[in-house]
Image 1 (cartoon, rainbow, N blue to C red):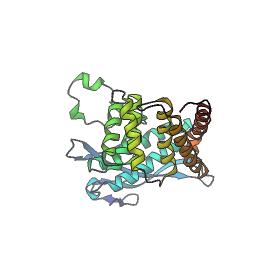
Image 2 (image 1 turned 135 degrees about the vertical axis):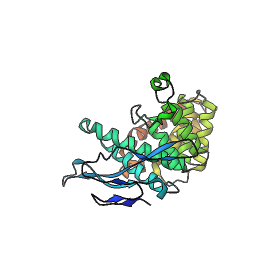
Image 3 (image 1 turned 180 degrees about the vertical axis):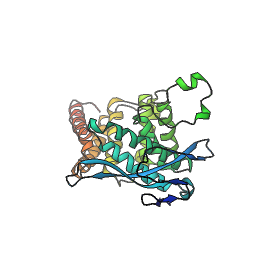
Image 4 (image 1 turned 90 degrees about the vertical axis):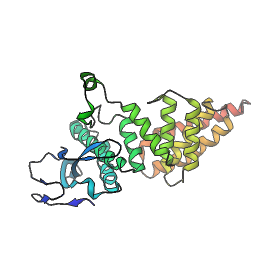
Length: 286
């Protein structure tokens, strides 16, 4: 487990003294862990956000050092990486751009620790980091992989990494990973565009979805609806499209009602899709 230490204490597993002057986002290069997948990753600080009494963001305080050997299944890395990712997503003020970037960089490092231990959810989370290029091309790279000047100049393969991570997670049956894999196939992210595989991935997402998360069920239904309406990887079917749009509306309305305002646009899309399909059906289209 993560070892929580007070300021000034020494974490024996990391042999690093935590000081008030430490850079809380700087990897601890003295403690590289080599994994079976070839990754050589450093331990890093674990932090938490600090807010004032009016909920204004003040910055971070460090709470621990992440020590790989104390986290055999990667659950700690996944948990703390998720907290940093969520924190980064919340920092929309341009004044906090550097802090946002640091949050995502540390989240990527922690997710990679977890993924290297075989944690499927960590692969999915990494997929999001790379799909949206949260770190703006600045990711952890093992220097021994950079053997030529061309290696140094080559951009980090974010799209290819996103596809590979979503596929690895989808192969374990994670519904959300299937629908993001479908997005990759549909949009040619890290792979050649393939509408049939996109549709099949969305179908698998629906098959594996347990309905526990409204935003997820709604997002999957919305993508299937678009496929049926546009004939993406399947035959045009406005009746099926309408059914899926109505399912998407029901779940997305619930998600927004529960505070997931990010999905307001998707909810509008579902409602517009319902109107379009009803019109097509009224004109005799099926």
